Length: 80
Image 1 (spheres, rainbow, N blue to C red):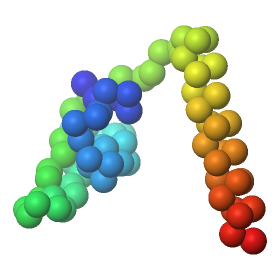
Image 2: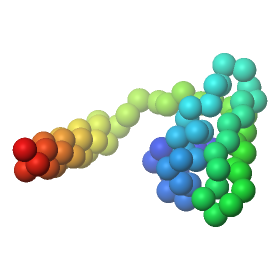
Image 3: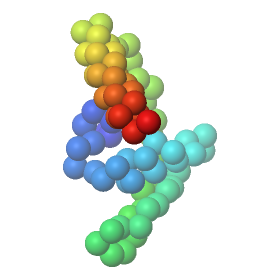
């Protein structure tokens, strides 16, 4: 089972393709070029809806988002 939280061993491109796969008819297939050569074929055989988010995790995510936005605004201000 893959989630965005436990997918650290996958590359960003592979993970994006996993979550973009059309899951209305399973199994669903997607693919991405491997930077080391070749092609990575992805098969989605099951989709599990996410449960409720723990309130502490939700606060942590909100804090991380505020911090990232603040950094982006600061960088944009410095460029002008």
